Image 1 (cartoon, helix red, strand yellow):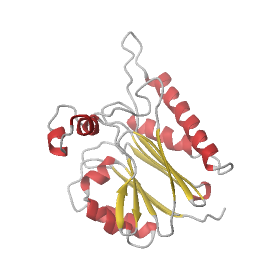
Image 2 (cartoon, rainbow, N blue to C red; image 1 turned 60 degrees about the vertical axis):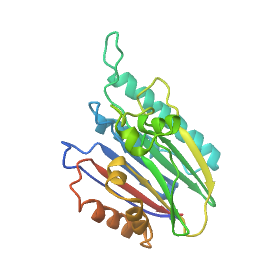
Image 3 (cartoon, helix red, strand yellow; image 1 turned 180 degrees about the vertical axis):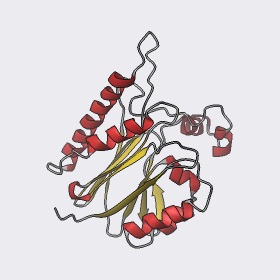
Image 4 (cartoon, rainbow, N blue to C red; image 1 turned 30 degrees about the vertical axis):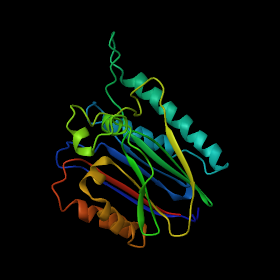
Length: 240
């Protein structure tokens, strides 16, 4: 099926990882893209992230954007319950042993929707400026919001990188949703924390201005891999 959208994606295992716990979906024919980052503190994070993208791959292009948002919600609730059923430790503690972040992008003509839980991000490159559309669900972000701390101050807190939302973390998954109108020249970036922590906003903007999604992805990874990257790297770039 021909698509009005161009996109490209890539993932790579980090130097400190035994396996790549990231996964991505690049499905322009269905107008659906996603990045999932298996939670490294849990076992089987790679399985959780693969479950996320495999379920989202079945989201149909039929229906309007609102209907497709609901379809994504239902798919991810199914994954959330499946993760908890399959990997919750028996006994009184009920401790979940796997989980994943998710950030997804849906497009229809002139409209976009970003859905997420966790700290994988969605960025928009528009009119030579970079905008972070998603807001991290993390203790770090909560400290910055509620206590008006700087990034450096919040990072000093123990466990600041802990997530406050993720697939599999709670009995019900709470997704955040942002809808917007698209414009000619817009470029979207979905990425895991390994990528955006390795690069500055200037680096991200330079890559997204490269003209095509494939060139943008190549530029992102070339810039990130100049550094000793310990975490997994994943990026999906989309041009409406």
